[in-house]
Amino acid sequence: MSRYIEIKTHPILFLLYLEWILLFIVALTELLPDPVDKLPRLSLLNLFCVGSLFILGLKLPQVGRIDKLVYTLVEISIILAASIVGGIRLFPVLYLILTLRSCLIFGKGKCLAIMVLAFVLFLVTLIYRFQTFTFPLRPAVPERLEFILLGFAMFFGLVLVFLFLLVNAVLSERQSREELALANAELRKYALKIEDMATLQERNRIARDIHDSLGHSLTALNLQIETALKLWRSHPTKAEYFLGEAKRLGSTALREVRESVSKLRSDPLEGRDLQEAIAHLIQSFHSTTGVLPNCSIYLLNSIPAELKVSIYRILQEALTNICKHAQATHVEIQIMTTSTDIYLIIDDNGKGFNLKQNTTGFGLQGMRERTQSLGGQLEIQTSLRQGCRITASFPLLIGNC
Image (cartoon, rainbow, N blue to C red):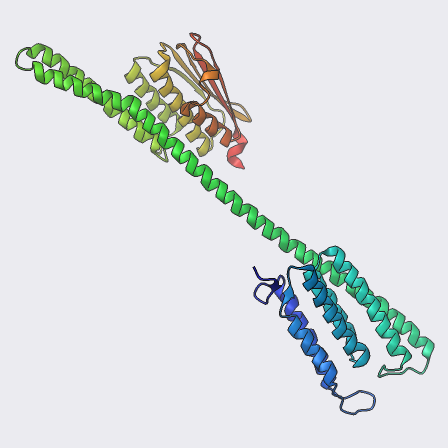
């Protein structure tokens, strides 16, 4: 890492360009003839000092207290040499540049100290010029000149304060933007991690479902076919029975494949409204288990698309769990809206489970994540041999934000 701030990495480029313009004006005034005696005036010392300040501005010390201190002392020495020894005309501009650069090098506290020092040195130079009569214009009334000098000193002090506040405000705004950019980068990084974790978790879940359901069905199907082949000549009636079982298992496996593919679709509703999609779920559940769920849907308000998808996925997962584990003979589904919320309630009279021992299941975890991502809440009430009730509530305003 470089110890100096170069032109390409300068915090505020327009201030650097402003320095160059001011130094150019200072140098130009030294080349112009004196307005009092009309004689050409060229101070090699002053031009050397202006050139030195220009070169110093190309690289500002970024780290190291000694580097910054030496840099500032060199600047002050050059400015004093040009102001007192060389008698440069626009010496206040040099103190402005000193204050500006100190704001870029130091913190607010040290920059304020250097600003006060610059003002004191300006007063010393001004008094020295006044006492030695180096001003090009000499008014006829010295008392009047004192008031003019006092007003000029006050004005210069206000300019220093304004410059100090302006530069620090710009630097603070720049720092805030950099911190915000870093925070956004961190958020994007965490979002990608969460997305990768969610993707991996969903893949593991689907792999587990395929292993538990489709793998079992295909294994049983293979056994049925092998048995039918062995009995085909000696006991054709039994072989026909095993073939029928194999056909049933094949249909089950095909249905499970379709369910797995359906869970992977980005648009599970496939352009249908929520009622039609739920009716299809209920019909599929009925054809699989022989149990026809009782469904009541009361929608008083329109539902955002993201809420429809979440409700469909949660209901799909709940019915899948009931089909696999609950051994229920009665299922009740309710979807209702109020002026501010929407509720999904799924009841079954199955064997239930111990909620404390099933908190890490992919199904329940997925339902919680879907609910919480939309600002909702998921409540599960169950116990052994007492059935299960799942209640998901969502604020309707979440879709309009």
